[in-house]
Image 1 (cartoon, rainbow, N blue to C red):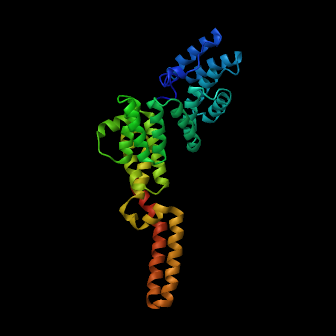
Image 2 (image 1 turned 90 degrees about the vertical axis):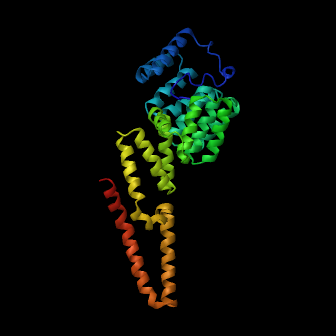
Image 3 (image 1 turned 30 degrees about the vertical axis):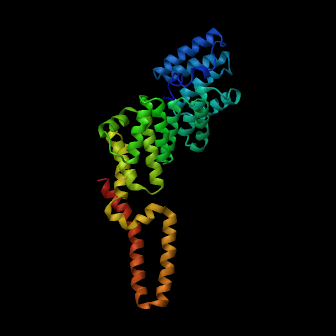
Length: 310
């Protein structure tokens, strides 16, 4: 389901949509014109049409929702969130506003706030595979792979041929490292911007948790899908440096970050002091080795990363 496409939620539950017949004819005409412009990705023109309608009826929920959609598409998610909050404060069951709010929150990195929004949609529209698939992608970003797979399985049970759910299933396979149709997965990433965005966020989450080899594997797949993207190339080069065999002695520091560094430092100091009392002849070699390791941890990473970029 495409959050930018105003028609993408039309099949979620037709009986649950609010009738549009109450709007004045001129508002209906403006909405229809805006929808056509949005479908063609002509955001600025659609925004101008919607603002023209809001000059007539400033609190119209559909106009505000579609304006939020155009702002979201133009990377103005903060303003889109503000508009959607106004809509949902007055009409908390507005389907399009709710689903768009979920995607806006994800774009802003507010995963904790986005989760109850999609859960509410799943509760209200239990027969919609699109919402289950959207929740699965959220779980992928949180690295809850098993839960994402369970959601995808349920969505496929409801709609075995749903393209959006099949794309999410392929993305689960890719993140999980399962072998499958590699060419199909690369085509998925090349053709679906949403999948690329989800995969990019999964890579960032893996890096934050110190799971660098998994992150490098996914970063390579992302680069294959968009070989001309300098950011994707830089990410692969950086992760290739971080996972180089020469940095294996630094794995605890990479895996646990500052927590690992502090733990190793305190452990080494305590062990060195104990050696000075229990086996003085080994204390000096230990401190020399420890100092060498400390210098190595400072010098080696930037050198290896520099070599990886060449």
